[in-house]
Length: 565
Image (cartoon, rainbow, N blue to C red; front, side):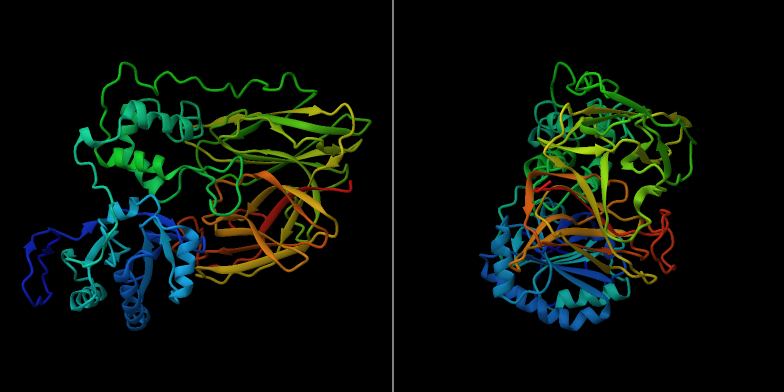
């Protein structure tokens, strides 16, 4: 049974059992997608006085009644800088949640807590329960039903005078959430349950010499870093390259299951116990040699100019041209990058360009153009890229390669000389791969939290799309790729709901998408130029297009081939 904490300034009517709590409960940061695929992070509401969250369930009558009360509360308090959300921890189907929202006229975001980990973190146990959260201190101020105590909490939150968490009984619907493991004996087993997830999802980058900031090579390392691991999992910072799982499917997206998340977080919450094992399963892992050719000796090898990387500081993009000796056309069927120093090479993009072309990364031209994009390297990318069957990238005779390199310093001065291996077709393939940029002009006002931008392009001929890539800079917030077919129907193909400048892969579609002639493709997204964006160089500035990373770009890249060519 829940009890009411000591309330300080609150006047409490009626008989309520009381137990002392020294201060508002710490909740920790978390992030979830809502029913529309939008990203919400607890700490990014820190410009609000409070955040009111209702535990929602499609099948719970108490939840439906509470939703009506929440709308009334919102009408009174939203103008007082209080934000309102719902959260579904009942593991309801997404389509059903959307229908419920439509049928009940719910306009608020409904956060999808399908793993139930946020409910566990916030100690939510009932649908119909309402919480008041403090986004600035990441704490719980109130947990209970609607009523005077909830209103009193919001009043006190306005003056930052809440001393303790108010925890009251709720007549709601049980969410059947497993209690947190409080003893090592109740926790997932490190050797047989936790370590395999780390091997599958994390260890390739988090190893000695890898791009990760620390090596996950033993139980002791995991245990020591467990608070950080929990935080990046709960805020969806890791695994990187996450996309909305409800839209499309991509071979190289970082999908991690609810069961895997539950195992890791519940193990950490139980104290990251060691358990029993004869040999630590993370201590003797063998990694693929990123310095060897996976497809045999390439037909042609290119070495980038040696780049000196300082120990500290921010490095701008480096654009270099590499002349090629070919007197005849070459068709590339596969490529592989071997990084010189993978701990500092953040990404490398390679294009085929004309002899006199001044490329500069290809991003200065804001018109929609198709380019021959050979391939790119990004952290964790160790596999050779083999183009879809009977497709390839053409290198016309006399053309060169234009490379864009981006390095991140890591506290140790080093140098990089990355190698590119190309494998050629013996005969011309049926289709030529192109990458088309779809971009827009924009002006982002100072302190704008959600400045929306849209770009579009019409494909005159039928094309088959096999890759998509979002590109913005530090203020990028989200980006979505959609197709509007000639009959007027719309289909979302990719959504990057929490864009990160640190991760810009080309997402490879598991199944290529055919777009008929006349299809209009859309790239929509938003920028966060506010102080809530911790990566923002200067929220006071009015931002327009620019090549430097502290300026901005808005480009959606479509990799495709035309069926008739």
